[in-house]
Length: 327
Image 1: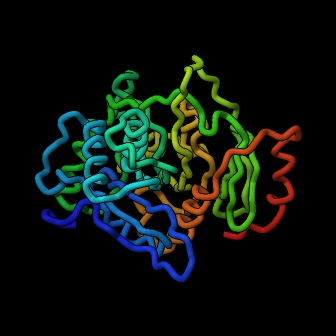
Image 2: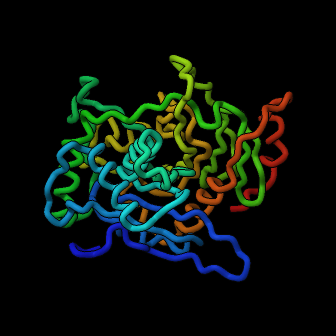
């Protein structure tokens, strides 16, 4: 990553052998610090992987138009890089939010119709509420203890602190797969789960099912627009605050929830959750994330809608859940 470098830059390429089919490319969007450093530490992801940094990083300039303007510009950067067809899109923290906005823009615009988002990889991106609009004080949540950061990274974080308080997540009309049951594979095992049932892999146990009530739609649009399916990689540790408080750091507001708060208003677009032993800001300090990310990507590619069965899907999953986890 440098001022005149490619953006997005190709981080790794899939090594095709014989008749092995090409896997869906992955594009990863930068975090709130504007860089893509962590994505170079992920290990081999068995596919073409691109990383997109904040093009304003080097100038330190804010984005006029905020996060939505960033997302529109990033779609153009992906198109200009020659990336076409179905792709997996994702990112860490702010990168997850940008991926969701980019998916929504691509769903409603036709100028880049040859780019489609087949799935989202959310790397510890908690559900976002615009606290300034909700009358919530930013001072309510303490700042986390962070190592010394480069000045340009600090500048990027400051710009995020100005954009996020009033920014609202994009809305979707319908749930993934229209609320049908879905089939998803992890570690060679297949789960068939109803809408609202989400496989969750804690770090210290086998897969379990998180059962959430289905979100009712407020209206029934003629042609509902559904979000791409998402896999959430979730950190299970809280950050240490600079000044201890009764409240956690803002990034940990939903830390105790396996879905990091996303069930509040999104229509079941998260299809599985995989935990990692880490706090939010130390996620890439360990070099063993390749296995978790590859599992998440394989699950996205395995996902399909199925016809609803007459028997309960939770019962159908029990034999698989009783077996040792293989990931």
